[in-house]
Length: 436
Image 1 (tube, rainbow, N blue to C red):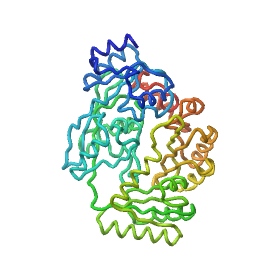
Image 2 (spheres, helix red, strand yellow):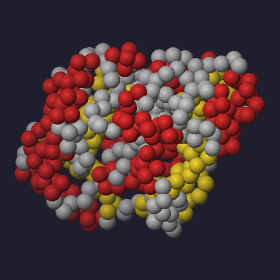
Image 3 (tube, one colour):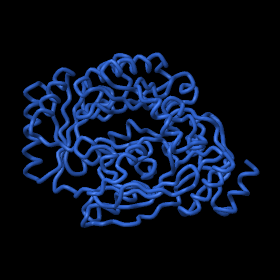
Image 4 (cartoon, one colour):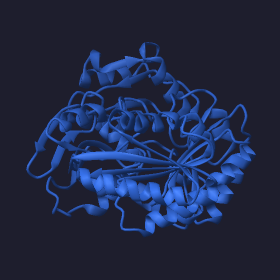
């Protein structure tokens, strides 16, 4: 690395390189979680041209590169090969264009989500994503990890909001897909490929999202009680004419941690005109009451605090003993999955599943949960046409288990795509599904 740093300094300057010892502790923690080793430096290009030159240099020299933004999700995914440098887009942090009338925004990949959202809200618009660590998460990192949140019930996932991307290929060339208008569908499949690719196909530089107007009113209904009653209520909700923007199922321990009562929970958010929100909330509360569930209604600051607290319990600051998994099951099996979580973890696991999609997250503690327990949970998910992927976990645990647990039949296709985009295998090597 001593030979690499001076060569890169010619491109980004001395201020564009940070040695390992000078990195913040959270960066060191996240980087070390990727493959259990330390690196000498992180490179911070300040423009697309510098990023392109860095990648051209890395491609010609055969240096392995770990792309990142602010470092909040560098530890997600599999344990890859040791890399020669970490490349951060943190200084690519400009909003390029906000077309208020078209409800679109184009920004560089290093823009932090919280900063962009604050700017959009001033115009009465917002980006309906709720990523982990929103204060630090960058737009590029959100796309690379397909990190959406509870609003996906109404607005869809990351790729449903992504209209266009620009990226630097492994050989340093700049490429584009899509555009800056909602009707533009050119490059649609390419944007899907980059969503959730964990930095294995290229390094995002500019991204364009569709936006939505902020609704007039908002209220959240929380129902708590027996699992069977929660399942019945959820089934009725999804089959009804009600139009929630979020509907999440909560494990018993998560309900307790949030101070919402005892039992399993269903948290449903309505956002629309004031009268519509009031009417829909009342109808859902009535359904819950008929089934013996405890119901509460939150509005204003109480509601804001509730939705802020919910992901914070799942996405607590990464710790040596923390395990966070992404799970998926068919929606009809979501309650059974949370019941299984309670059983396998003796009621200590925190679980959240989006009722409409069956996707969600669980947070465990490696000090009390054995690897066999995680494998049993994965088996349960797969038996319901789902999956369990380990995102955050101690390196020792990731070395024992297959982080992705992929059981599909598309690995050959994935490998061919990787070879097309990154023939020298220098971008996030072996970090993705199947050691890609």
